[in-house]
Length: 428
Image (cartoon, rainbow, N blue to C red; front, side):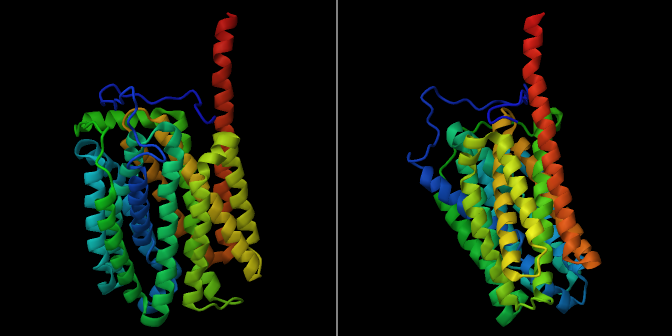
């Protein structure tokens, strides 16, 4: 997969394309509206990840209150990410018809409302249901945001713009876990998730006030036949299929590691208190940096080179995390986090560049695969930890990284074969 193309394309004639004036009035770094747009989507990313993973650092406390094992408690994370994965495609279709900003605003409004109900869940079953609803509500954010950026930002700035949105994800994930860890240590997990709900309300209001109105959106059709045609065309594209699989596998690693790490660090030989465990998620700041610099990484190494580098970084982090030394475990988490967020930014921006029609559906399919990976990683990672300890969780992660590398190698071969075909035709 080269930075520009691998010879694959996506095309659906029935879906109207986005027309851009010759003068190209789309947003660009330093231009009017770009900073407001970047901050708005950054805050949307913060709210999304803070809400989506608000219970992840609290799983040991939830297990203790409801008397359930790690695998059952992990469903409070898996239900949220699974709900998002199931609803992201329908929500992307709504954004094609009613607009990206409208759908993103509605999604945040519903998600923060449910977030204020989560602290009052009377049982583990009720908590899982509420989290599933919250994830479904959040589904309008990821696909709509990347489609908005693809339409409103100049192509040369697209990877950087998406990287900033992903950086907001990392800040949200970090702040949510750090805040919940310390608040839960003093007042319990219910108060801590309530605080996250209040934080998300503030982000949602600021997002709506800051985000510029779209100027290059063209409404599409909600007809099922058109939607299915778009989805089929995207799934028929080999490059898009590879990118979807890469997103899912990276998230499998990340979901498994950060679901099980709280259990590992509260147990011996570490025995850390809940507040300190929550502070471990400050490592997410590394992801903020790696995601925002993904554009430069692709510029230097190309898409395939960048994926090889971040895959190797993630694998090295997994192996380091096996050590019984807390500093080495932290270094391992740093490498895993840096590799994941950079890989996610590279793959998701490649989807937006590849899909020239039905961008919201293309992004939605990526997000669906991505969050299916998160749900699978959270559940399987917790089960592996219960069965074989941290080594079991690491083994799942290494298998997923091997999958990323294998898919990238196959993509490289496909690109070389596609490049040779015109030469063969000319020789004839």
